[in-house]
Image (cartoon, rainbow over all chains, first blue to last red; front, side):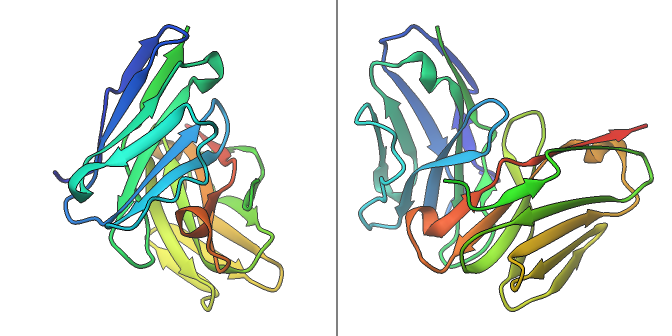
Length: 113
Length: 114
């Protein structure tokens, strides 16, 4: 597609449930990033995929968070046993290799009740 | 930890006036980027300035970079109501690390009064 697509746009879940967030990057973009943004805050880096290399998971806040990227394209961020502090907007971005600006999706607003 | 810190945290001006936002950072950088965010959703890339550049223009946007002071400014000229948004600076670090070292500040919330 023309942009980065994220789904769902909104997700309300009960504490303790697992959630999956999806990101469809721009076709041909080799780099894909997940960020988390809490209300009124900046972006917190979660995980980074570059081509076929092992992902950089250094930003994942706990072992309840995991992500995969299948076929170098679509990525899924999974949060297990959700907690209220997981409530945030989860943003996905992609770009071509090398330096340059990121293209962001519209995000998934996750609310854990 | 935050690398880029925007200043001010919030700014309200009249339509037609110029808006200036500042960003300070701590470590050496490859590049510095500015993004706009509307309604707490996806960020839009505005402009990238490399560490060997001092000034860059794009439409009504002017970005300066002073690597000796580790600071950057974003100037929006002739502001419009549609410029109301949060503006973030993001730094690409030479030290590598997560996400190519691109670290975002907490943003400046700009309000343009009609």
